[in-house]
Image (cartoon, rainbow, N blue to C red; front, side):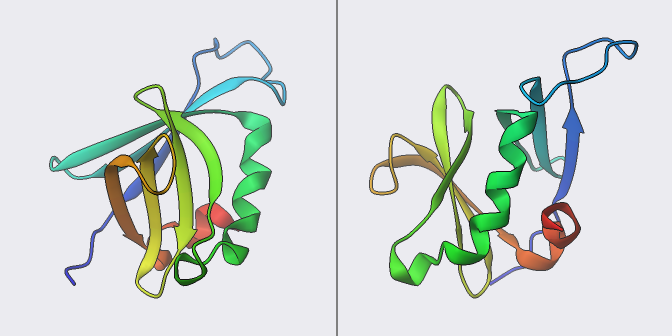
Length: 110
């Protein structure tokens, strides 16, 4: 499998003078150069959910729901190669799937 070098960018729709609260909306952009960008909308307080990704194993058919993309929920799961992000109504019927090597977003999860 070819490695995907993804970079995570976090941005927010509030002014720089505004202090974000835990329920502030944020945007997580996972970018692979000019090839693709996955934009995930979420709340700042939802980031603690990502800590549970270590328990969400693809082989066990478990995942966590974190944020949304294209007005659909995103489902995150861990597999041997990295983190799988599914965009769709559930983990059986999805429209987009991205696998990101775990090392690429390890700092993001810590």
